[in-house]
Structures are given as structure tokens and as C-alpha cells.
Length: 206
Image (cartoon, rainbow, N blue to C red):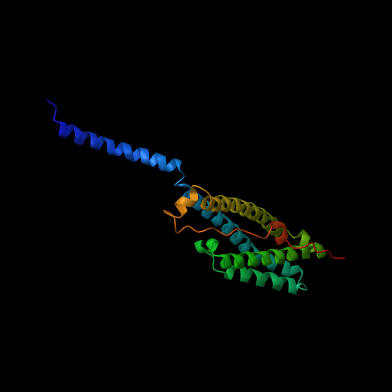
């Protein structure tokens, strides 16, 4: 006659993994993983934003030196760009920036000022035909323009990633997980200055 106690123990051992699988599937279906998943996507998008801004900052010194060689009288514009770059690169930026409104505001403002100053520097070339024809200047200008385009794309992707993440924190069932399993998760900041507003106005020379 079968040993009922042994069968019962065996059944429990077989049932436990099955229950874990069912529980895990059920939790996944309830969106328990959405918050950390969306958080990582937003952080990755933020890293791309920083990479593109860093690339722009690295191109500016060579651009300034090239312009200086042909437009020494534009010292005010050259100084503005140099100072704006120094300000933008001096701001400490890390993973906490996107959940700190004041840090994010400072970062955004500094990058906006640098965009405006850089736009004025590029516009200076209109008054200097030799500068406009300089191959080094043309190459740097093309790289700057390409980087600005990548910044715009990176900002757009970041804004969307943050929208998804912040929405998950505030809507059901994500709000349940945010108040239980993921209490340390905080809403992320997003850009409030439109890309077109960050660009300098066109400067025309007679």
C-alpha cells in the first residue's frame, strides 16, 4: 500500500515550484516590473542626452579658436561662448539630477545659455567670407549641427521615457507598487524649454 505521507511530501515539493511560477506570472501580469523597467529606460535616455551635450562641449574650443583666427574683433561673442561653456560643464550632473528639480533647472538653464551663445558665434561667420570658406570651420560647423540634431533626438527620447515612467508611478496599478515595493522611486524631471527656444535668434550683418 502506498505510503501516503511520502506521496503527500512529494506532492508538496512538486507543487511549490508550480505555485512560484504561477505567482510570478500573476505579478508580471499586474505590472510589478513596469516601474524598474521604465526607470532604467529613462536613465538610459538621460545618459544619451548627457553624451550628446558632452560631445558638443568638446567641439566648442576648436570652433572658438578657428573663429578667433578670422574674427578677432568679435571678442565679446567669443568670451560669451567660452564662459557659457565653462558654466555648463561646471555643473555637477549625476543620476540624482533627474529627480532633483533645482539641479535639473540649473543644468537646463546652463545648456540653454550655451546654445544661445553658440548660435551667435556661428552667426558671426556671415560677416567673414574667409571664415565661411575655411575648411576647418566648415567641418566643425557640420559637426556642431549634427550634434545639435542628435541632442534634439536625445531630448525627445528622454522626455518620452520620463513621461512613461512618471505616468506609471501615478496610475493604477503602478501607484500600488510605487507605494509598496518601490518607495524609493521618485518622479523624474523633464525639459521645460522647447528646443526651438534654446536656439539663438538669427543675427544679420549688413
